Image (tube, rainbow, N blue to C red):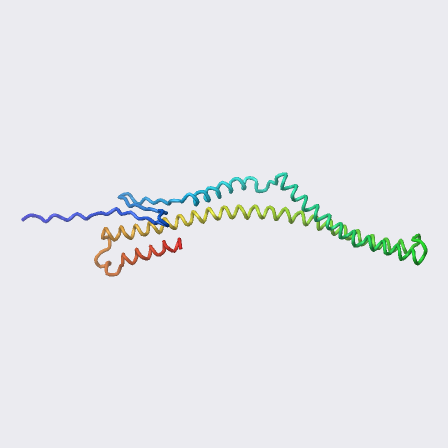
Length: 219
């Protein structure tokens, strides 16, 4: 009696890919040693990704270093703020002194008296306080400008870093979903599910589920 030969199981090595607007974004191929996956950037995506990386590097090394032009710009803003404050102080107290002089002169015929000097000293004391406040405000303005400049620089670095991380994250998610699709398809073709489990599983439904997840990444 001849022995029945055991039918050799066919092993499939399928491939899968994700295409957007006719261009392949990700592809996977299954081999006996595992799966190979790749992600394809279009020219604009690659240019933006490379630009973000280059800009991050170029700006990071000098993030706390101010160029001569930056220092000049900050000083110009501080000087403008100072001059504006000086104008306010002078426009406030100079007329007060002039009005007080005229009033004393009308009343006493001259300003060589104790009332004039007392009033003058009082006004000058108030002007000195205003000048002291202005000096503190100018220093605070200077620190504010410096902190804003640094904050803008760090925000820009964070934007560049977040952009690259987001592209990298999207890349990994796309490859993972593409690989899931490949594994689901490969498992179905190779008949790895037992007959008892086949009634509980739905390979086509799994494929459609993964496909819907992929579509959600681009639309």
